[in-house]
Image (cartoon, rainbow, N blue to C red; front, side, top):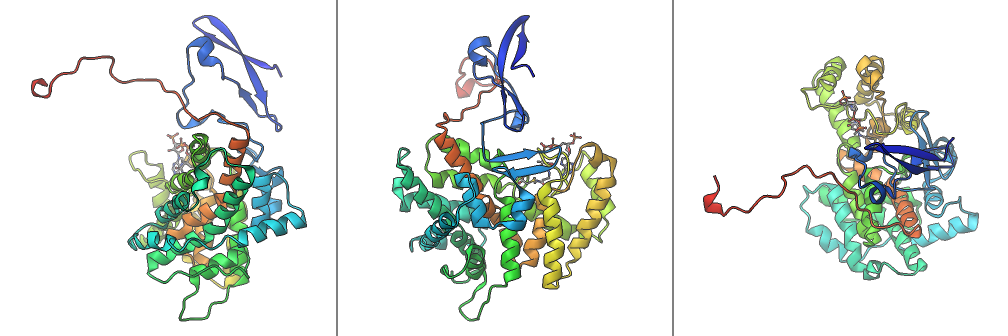
Length: 429
Ligand code: CMC
């Protein structure tokens, strides 16, 4: 392949270099476009724009491939565990036994949060959505660890922030839930693994004995692996762009949590269950809802369907669908919305509207069904997504910092009024 691209503007030709990735993805390098031609590119929603070069995650939307640092998601979900995958994403290689022990030990020693965090939590009404609480508690860490505000801090300081973020996430997530239900918060039990620790903080009550179900802990661990990174999506790009201003890691991660919250992104997992419940209540007529989704005058979209990058099955959805059957079977749960989900999927995959637009079930379509089976409340589904995505955000933030990327600052094509004179208020028509 040629190493350059030709661009002709007003009859004048410009040569632009091509960048080729290790999986042969091709990018046109336009770094000097504005300077050379006076023009910028316009790409709403960044559908065709590579914002960075990254060595973390590879995905091929047409072939349905997803790999973290070269390892396939299928293999990692089957053989690895969430902390090992987190290490892989953040530091680039699978850890040796000693590196793994050190990493998990370091995380365990930071699971407690400052007692004053409780005062912040107390300030939230029980109606607060846990995603808003989670984002706020994350951002509050800038106050407890003000050294994180120093953009030039040493590498070991960054390691500490990484470990603290990973360690405190389950505590914050469980506390956000406790705030919503009005129960006292639980402290982390460091004798447990990452997911079991979270589950105990979530569900243990002072009045009752609580034993973590290993089936639930292991299913949650797998779900976290599947969500751990997904290259330059909305929340990850947010983390990188906020971090590029040299804001603290905690405020960058908090911004990522806020971006993830939206129903077109991570918030979709909650919306899927809301939708399935609604269809069930409405009599279970999936055809009617498929027609609503196709109707351009109706704002309804089939939640959990479609993806910006996957124009084939989302590989995560395949694994999650199988895991949903498995977990429901093991826990002896018969969830009627699973049947509606299956009917909806079957009908959509045959419908020309969805086929032509290459709309397939995405990661969020079945994950809510598992979360529900694990006993997690609907409001907490997106928090689970955030817990899984945390190592990905951290890895991307760290890569952006190590690559010394410039501040993210897109351009625009101005379409507003041209210059006009100010008119005093009393004389405006
Ligand atoms: N239901 C009905 N129509 C849809 C859907 C859907 N779920 N998704 C896309 N379309 C249609 C859309 O109306 C458009 O049709 P037309 O060409 O006639 O105007 C066409 O398909 C292309 O859609 P788009 O909005 O231009 O595609 P996009 O790449 O900008 O959006 C998406 C991707 C995920 C935001 C979108 O598919 C969607 O809104 N899905 C539902 C929400 C959802 O499940 N989000 C989770 C995404 S995966 C996990 C994550 O990122 O967090």
